[in-house]
Image 1 (cartoon, one colour):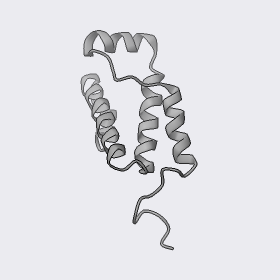
Image 2 (image 1 turned 90 degrees about the horizontal axis):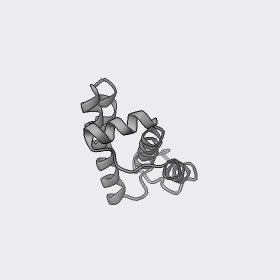
Image 3 (image 1 turned 135 degrees about the vertical axis):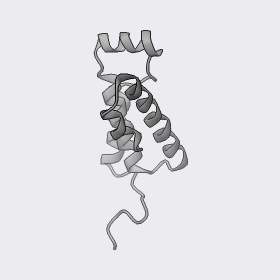
Length: 98
């Protein structure tokens, strides 16, 4: 998950690689624990950021880096909804002590 913050200060090539790594890792976390709210939040943010890239940025990414994995605002909304309704929350040790 540290790939996300590191990507913000990196060059474009590194940002693309970090973005792909974040997606890979968050999908793996959800595969292992489908009730991990932080993972759903991170994946929702990833979907939103990639889905809202402009046409020129998408074309450049496709041409130079082979594009990005598919993303959509609908997938971002579904993941945010899952977190906000509490259906993904079970992080032992991270909630209230009672």
